Amino acid sequence: KTSTSSAGVSVGVTIAVNTVGIDSQNILYNIAEAIVGDVIPTEELRPARTEARVTRSDLAAGGDIAVTATSAATIESEVEASSVSIASSVDQNTTSVSVGVVVSMNRLRTTVKAVIEGSPSVQAGGGVAVTTANTAAIHSAVTAPTISVAISGQQSKSVSIGVSIARSIRDILVQGKL
Image (cartoon, rainbow, N blue to C red; front, side, top):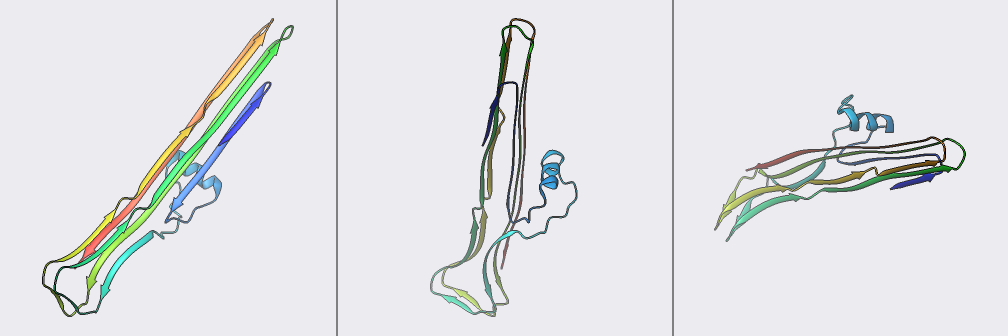
């Protein structure tokens, strides 16, 4: 959260980049990506991984056999840049400018995999289940409230600009294999 106030010109800027499973780039690249999308696909693909795996093992159970992988990766992001400018004069012209800018980029890349592979024998008295679940989520709120007031006995000008840009991307791979 960024808050600025002044007697004339006030500018508040907040930039937030949140990633899970992605190597973040430099700040200029992140700003460009938040505004226009993938500028240059250079991020390293290293998803947050959740795996449940049985490999080359005999499985035997009197009841059910279950191999389950579950992921609940989450990004919670609240970003604000507020700006207040007040200018006043009895006998002179006044100008007041207030600008609030928020840029927020949230990216989440996860892989969830459950596997039974290369097992020579899988014997269950009940059922065999290989399941995956991925409830990856991004919750993002961005605000840029601005107030500009100019008061004068002569001429007064007041400008207030608020800009909020948010981009959230979820890349999810879920795989179950028996």
